[in-house]
Length: 85
Image 1 (tube, rainbow, N blue to C red):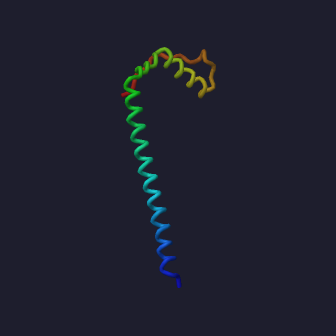
Image 2: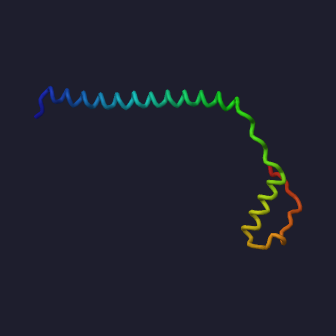
Image 3: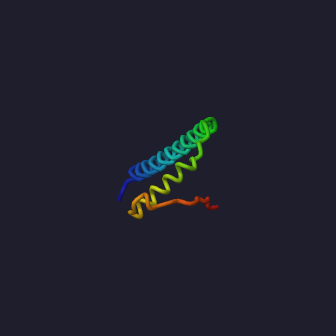
């Protein structure tokens, strides 16, 4: 049978462990919130990304078709490109 002081000591260790975990989790939440606020301010100031140029996009599509089909590039002719909605 355990003594009363050993039981209190066991509960003290358990409560201190759980308390430490919750304090650590709260710190992580606060750090993530602060980083989100800082990064959202920086992203608004940054330049807007350039859209992909049509000729570059067609070249990439043609290269992918040639690579996947295994045919000679001179055999493939792209007649039109339409954007899907």
